[in-house]
Structure formats: structure tokens, C-alpha cells
Length: 327
Image 1 (spheres, rainbow, N blue to C red):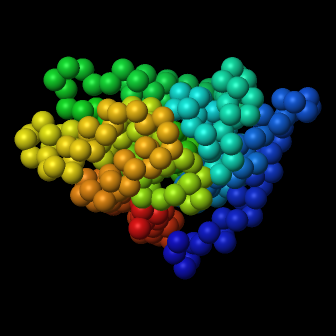
Image 2: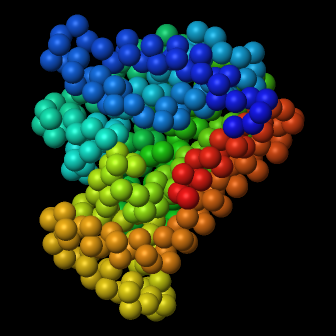
């Protein structure tokens, strides 16, 4: 980040949030504690709490409400990961076995529900507006997952549909993170609205970057199994771009063979690794990478209405850093 507002400046507040998160994911019963704390202990980027803390600097800075809001959004995010891993049959999450691999699907789903409940308890202490925002966000998270599961309507633009899914599934919670930080630090309403728009676009950029990273990196780097979405038949942006070219009659032979391979049995790790390697070398991955950068640029442009400050510059760099993970 920038020289005048570095990660080091945020570290003490982030450590305080981390301590609150440990408390929020713990349970007095040992068997339940092992499950509720599983992903929190595995680590993670803590991108959402970091954005809450950064956005708070548009107002009066970090206070207890800001820290609680940061914990609330991270708990909500963790809860979605338990559910996502069940739906995706993912073997790894953050370099550790996914919860359903250890305790089974039912326990993993219920653990996610328990973390949602704890997030709601924390947000309830922040007032009616916070509860409404959290509820609206939760609705969008669910709708995004439903729309991804159902797929686009016949004749609809699959790429546009996917962007809408990302805006709901990822962008909504990142937008809420930015909104909460500014809101509970007393920033002006017009700045809060800027941060919300910025956060949603950052979320789309982040997820598009993840689509690239999922193919271009190994499990040691990402903490996840590369190509899990391919095995489950979930079309991420590179696949959608292949299909878009096919529909337009412009798909090359390599792309045709990749699509054919996706329709074959990818149960074995060797078969999955082979199709991931072929896709990794195709130009649609670069096209998806460019899309991620474009969305990050759009997010930064949302900040134009903010006065120049170290916080504004740090927010701009935050968006760039998220997509530069693809390099």
C-alpha cells in the first residue's frame, strides 16, 4: 500500500479484529469448537475486515463498532465457505481439508449456519440499519448462489449473467464491508455511497481474478484444488469465454478440444489436471485476466468523487493489489 497509509498502520486494529474473530468462532463444546474454528484457524486474506478498517479512515477511524462490523462480515464470509465447499465438493480450503471432508456434509452445513447466526448476533448489536444492510446482503449472497446454480435463462447472455452472479455472491459482501467501515466511523453519507459502489466492483474484480488464479496456480499457492469448478460443471469466466467464441463461430481447435474434454469424465485427478493445463495455455485466460483488471480500474474510478487523501490512494491500491495476485 502507500507510504503514508501502510498495512503496518492497520496491523494493530487487524490484530484486535482477529482476537474478536477467535472468540466469535469458538465454542465451549470441544467437538463443536473444532468445526466452528476450523476455517478461521486456517487463516485467509482477511480482505473484508481489512477493507472495513481502511474505509473507517474516511471518517473518525476505528472504534469498537467498526471492529464488530469487521468481525460480522468475516463471519458471514466464513459461513459461506462452509456451504460453498459442500456444493463444490472441494477437497481443500486455505490449504486445509474442507470441513465436509473431515466431518461430513451435514455437519459442515450446520456449522456454516451457526456462523451465520453468530454474525447476525454481532450485527444486531450495531443497530437496525446494520441489521437491514446485513439482511439485504445475505439475500444477495443466496440469490447469487441460486442464479449460479440455475444458470442463465435461455437466450440470455451467459457472460453478463455470470457478472451478475459475481456481483451478488462476492461483490455484495465486499460492498457491505466498505459501507460498514465508513458508516460506523461517521463518514459523510455521500462518501459511504461511493465506498459501497467501489466495494461491489472490487468484489467482481476479485472473483474474476480468482477464476484466473484457480487455473494458473497450484494448490500449494491457493490452498484450494485447481479446477474444482470444472469438475463440478460450474462455468467460470474462461469457460464462458470459450463458449461465447464457439457460439460466435470463432473458437479455435484447441478451444473445441477443451470444451469436449469438459464433457468427459473428470473424476480422476489426472484427467482434471490435464484439462486445467490445456485451459491454462489458452488465450481466454488472458482475456479473463484483462476483464479482472478492467473491473478493478472501474472500481478505482468510483473513488474520483472522494477528496485526495492517503485513504483514497490506499483504497485505489487495494483494488489493484487484489487483481495483481494473478501475475
